[in-house]
Amino acid sequence: MARKAKTDPAQTSILDYDTAHARRDDPDTSHAAAEKITPQVSALQQVVLGALKIYGPTTDRKLVTILKARHGRTESTWRTRRSELVGKGLVVKVGTVDGQSVWGVA
Image 1 (tube, helix red, strand yellow):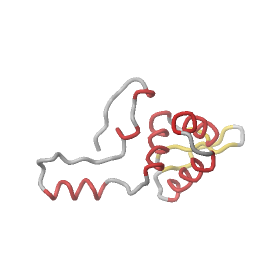
Image 2 (cartoon, rainbow, N blue to C red; image 1 turned 90 degrees about the vertical axis):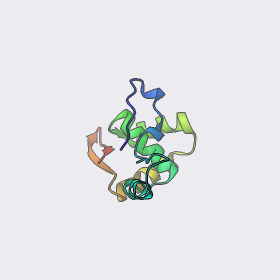
Image 3 (cartoon, rainbow, N blue to C red; image 1 turned 180 degrees about the horizontal axis):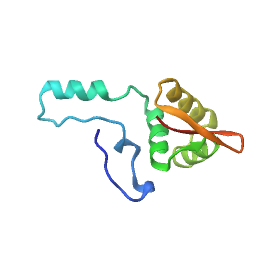
Image 4 (spheres, rainbow, N blue to C red; image 1 turned 60 degrees about the horizontal axis):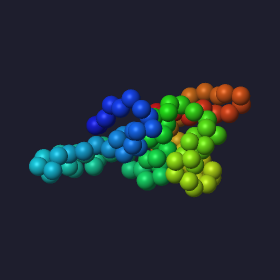
């Protein structure tokens, strides 16, 4: 998977992560392979997954604070998308802090 190295997380786009790409002039088999290995996640799930990759493992509370500041939406929206990613095996519970679950990328 292509990853762009950037030092400032605020300058990193969530679209820099979790998408396999094929070049325009690559054969059809390369495009098919890129589509096959890219997880089937919605745009909002990509935002959550990208935030976890940029900021590292965190609680729902902190994740929601980050995402609401950058993208709006409700707390429920972000918690639900994180939960969906857990269901897909892309996000896992990595511990607890002050009784809150800490979530990270699988």
